[in-house]
Amino acid sequence: MNHLILGAGPAGVVAAETLRKLEPSASITMLGDEPEPPYSRMAIPYLLRNQIDERGTYLRKQQDYFAARRIETLVERAQAVDVAAKQVRLASGAARSYDKLLVATGSTPITPPIPGLDQPGVTCCWTLEDARKITAAIQPGAKVVLIGAGFIGCIILEALVSAGAKLSVLEMGDRMVPRMLDPTCGRLLQKWCAQKGVTVMTNAVVAAIEARGKRYQVQLKKGAAVAADLVISATGVRANADFLQDSGVTLEHGAVRVDEYMASSAPDLYAAGDVACGKDFSSGEYSVQAIQPTAVEHARIAAHNMHRHRSVKHQGAVLMNVLDTIGLISASYGLWQGVAGGDSSELLDESRFRYICLRFDGERLVGANTLGMTQHIGILRGLIQGRFKLGKWKARLMENPLQLMEAYLAATQG
Image (cartoon, rainbow, N blue to C red; front, top):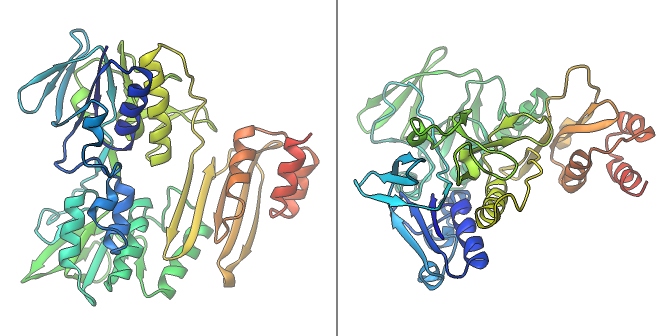
């Protein structure tokens, strides 16, 4: 069997390892388009804080790790896929055939239409090369403008502060992390950042970035310009699926639509991670969940089904994001925005930066937001994923959302 894996991130690596365990004699090739060994983007903030070196970002530390497992690794980029011929055309002009193909090409930063975004002092924070550029540019007291206060922006925010940057964050939405946190939660997070010396401007739309000598002026559509020594764009990501546009593979939300076996619409073609659009456990709708734990789960399931068709079923991922912003933990679970006609219950202690909001659909808990509270992470996921009917415990949670442990025990023990 000839297995070809496009992508050398967490999904690609886990899929290759799983396939090797399942098929000791198979041919396994993994393609990545960066010159570095396979690494985790989620480790980059720790690199920026000097808590690890570049080797610390590597997914597998042993120098000959993949060679020892007879997993061929190549630095190549896929340009097109011929699903009928089972062949991948590469940017180098070469072609690779496959019996089973896994698309795990991840995602890439969105480039917003901002004039001046291509200047030397403007960068993303997505690759190791980006991290090197940021590290070289930041000195204590350097003025850094971060465009975007979404999930990615908030992940690197603490690293920039730790490096001594004088940080200004520009978010076009009405609150921080608007795709993860409700208005109360997002507002509290902004207040927290302000107390830590970070300037956060919401409803701030960038019009242009202009060079002024060795520095920059970030011009806003409304309001004064913001001076910067370095500008970092963190305005979201999109799936790396452009090379599949003419392949006949069904795409949804810009990613590969997969079934419960991580299989695409094309025979013997699977997808995992940021480039896979699968069913959301909570809503039943198709969505992309661009987080590393989901990518790893996808990869293991895809590998099993590449080995033996329709052998392991994916139950659907519960959308859950946990974010550490300068020491304050925020989280979202499931349908955190609630459902039409659903009930909600919240508890707020603004002075201590503590917040919880539960969302119900009938007698079931379907979503939640929390801030400054970590003790309920597993319980909230369990209650949502278990689809438990809470009965009288719904009324008790409506009165006091902190009775989650008691509600969980009652639900799971009958």
